[in-house]
Image 1 (spheres, helix red, strand yellow):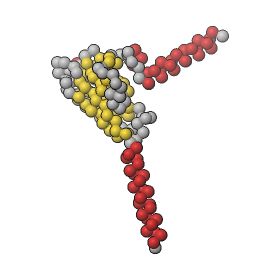
Image 2 (spheres, helix red, strand yellow):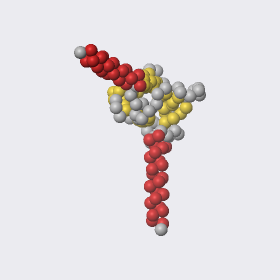
Image 3 (cartoon, helix red, strand yellow):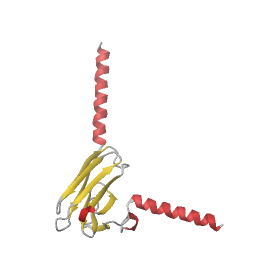
Length: 162
């Protein structure tokens, strides 16, 4: 009878430890998106990952939206945001986000402040309606696509030049 109690206590302890470690290992992701556009130009923000959809949010001029969620494996879970602005929200951009970043939507484009670095100030990162491959900075996804396109083009030219 004593052994059954010990087994039960060890079982409960193991379950508790497993649940606590899963919570402790999950990382809180925090990203800010600010609307710095003038004349009451609103912004629609839709952020999501492969695991979680944060929904659509209206951010009024001079307002901000805080992307905040727990992710059990943030190091491999891609997360991105769509932004729309302008008359009838016809101007659009999508980009990857990472913990600690602050994004600013302005009339001429989207700027980023990397909260993890020691740099100060914001840097122009994406233009509105500009494909990611043509923007000043490219995300991992767009860099991968450019590399893949160059590889396929090179193989195609090499194959037909023989």
